[in-house]
Image (spheres, rainbow, N blue to C red):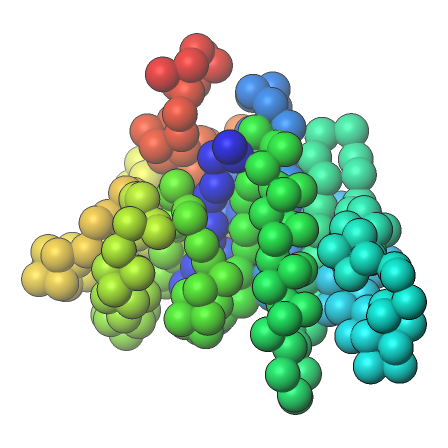
Length: 267
Ligand SMILES: Nc1ncnc2c1ncn2[C@@H]1O[C@H](COP(=O)(O)OP(=O)(O)OP(=O)(O)O)[C@@H](O)[C@H]1O
Ligand SMILES: [Mg+2]
């Protein structure tokens, strides 16, 4: 069974950034195969990872559902097989990880049966990897739609604002309603200003709010000028130098929660 990590949170808080750098960290640790899933219809995990996507699951599903409507899949062609083939066509394989872009969500009409088949096929694919990392869209829909299923580790990303923390709390509430489907959920506050030594700090008001809302804070990530520079230049985030503050602070957090330590030993 794959160890599944999902990243959620309000728009623009750094979900894709954290997902991409987590994937890169896992790849460098060399602890097994990685499936990256871009579950955001606006699709930019591939840009952060520096790979091109030609086909998405969303457009593939439209084609198959069209085929079912016109009777194409009633003539002995197995639907499950059609979904499996379509997923294989969408899968972008690289040396260090594979990537699946979900594309647009289901359109109008009843997609229950095809979605069920599709989910089964994606689950079957995902279970053949050691790690699955899911970059979610902003908002709570993916959690309430239960597309964030059976997650070992959920990172809820917030900006360093009270409003951001309140939005994060809503995600944790929803996750609690899902019960054991999410094994562990942590808050990460991103883009925090540094103290005089450059260490990212939570303003006292925010630290109080975290305590008041009883948010499970894993840690704080710095506002990193290198990330802004990479954005301006349109460079994939995974090419950020290893000593950039964001990478270093994220990696320190990952070692606390991943099923192996920094030295790569299995925990
Ligand atoms: N720690 C950081 N330091 C500097 N810039 C950052 C940092 N984290 C994220 N950014 C920048 O903030 C912007 C939003 O980040 P990102 O795309 O990762 O957020 P997101 O939550 O995935 O957004 P969306 O909700 O649109 O998917 C990007 O331009 C990114 O480069
Ligand atoms: Mg994003």
